[in-house]
Image (cartoon, rainbow, N blue to C red; front, side, top):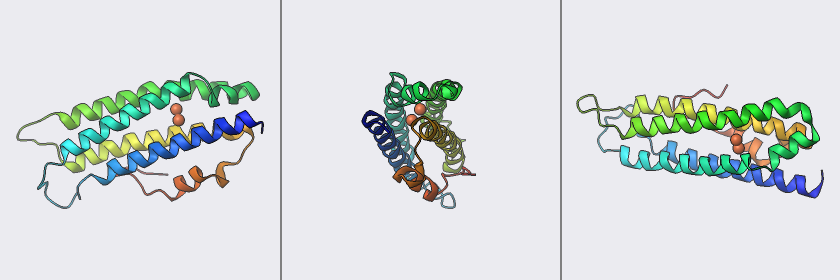
Length: 169
Ligand SMILES: [Fe+2]
Ligand SMILES: [Fe+2]
């Protein structure tokens, strides 16, 4: 791989690792489902979700501005439709997060949002986000002719615990 390609790949993988770390931290702030919601966990969760959306928005802008994915298509044009798909997913993921934030922040009075329900919703979005990252990993593997099985991110992904309510299969 050319020097630039390696830089692109390293940067993207480092960003994915950083985002995954933030997501894990936010998931860890969900209370235990079996316990009653003694403390109001929502302000912390809300701040966490807003941080994820902010970081993701920045990350997606970087990806769309050119670099790794564009370079992958340049060296392997058949990846074009996968990159178009990955880019289209950005808007959907940000919209999903916006809805989550709205839901988490809404006070439904007597029918207070339970951590269980929100945990399932967050898990579903995290599952989509990880599928999105996996798609980008496959694009990188083919575009730069690398095997990410040996990379930190792939190791981290294979060992990551399931998100609340999400399935990793
Ligand atoms: Fe992306
Ligand atoms: Fe990405």
